[in-house]
Length: 93
Length: 262
Length: 89
Image (tube, rainbow over all chains, first blue to last red; front, side, top):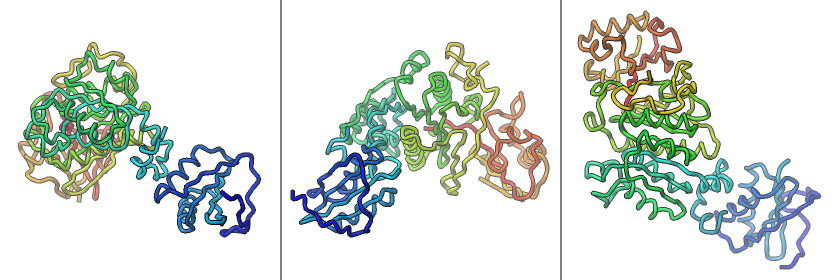
């Protein structure tokens, strides 16, 4: 997968915070609601100060998951890549 | 712990914030004993199995009869079979993640302590006063959380005994003399009543495992005809011989007639 | 009006599941009133030792044992519930 991604964040201009650890989850082949469920399951295993990047093939899906995640008090930002959408999620303090 | 199959099977409850993957893992590791696979036990077992309780103990010495099928729907097709064995067959078809241990006899004073201590939660789904007092006393002595429910016609009650709360004897210290309160056979019981209350027992068990709020020191009392659902406050009785800790063994107690502790 | 809710074993005597009466006084005097009104109810309420322990009495969902026992006062708009032990399952 090409690492190049547009650095303009769709949802906000807040830069991605500095962090110790980052995990990546590729859900491009997943269907709803497993897009949200698997994101949630991965988040449960993470510590604070960890970032999770989840990759989707569809902007709609990325936005839906972002909304569901945000209702559980995580912060999520969407980054557009070449042929994919990345959701960057930070665990709250 | 959660493979692809389990994520799919439990997806609808993993989404729930109070459950999530962590909660699901707890459920899969838990052990619940259902004493009585009849009116209350059948729906309780159904939903415990659906939720993915890792191990369900099922105790019942009775045999499936046609008069049961109006409410004990998991026994469909199993006339003449022992109810615990019949319930196990149902669980196996519904959810292979659940291990079932069958006690195809009525648990007695002699073996109940050894049995209940192997479980995280006990459900009293029996239908007689002696068994209810026996189960209450055993669970309080062994400090195993107990979910009690009892029903008649369209009336039901539900309470959870756990974490040092009031116990069943705090509400009723002894049983009515035989014949003074009608049984389900005499007064009748609606399938919807046992259906609802059995599921509520499963709910309390699930909440206990997930560490959510349960009905301790409270009793839900409902009349399904008038649709009144009341939560009655139960105060722990300082003189209760059981949950005060005074009762250490079941030796001296007779579980018959009024089941009184002298 | 005081509302009284009767369980199955009392409703078989009173022929009704609930009723509202003009009443104020203690639970004991309410029991006396009901025994007067429904002759057969006395045998359901009492045994040789006194009031049957397997019937709990609640005023506004509070056990009278946590209030003033049989001296608990009942007044207008109160709901009195009789709840006997049941064992069906």
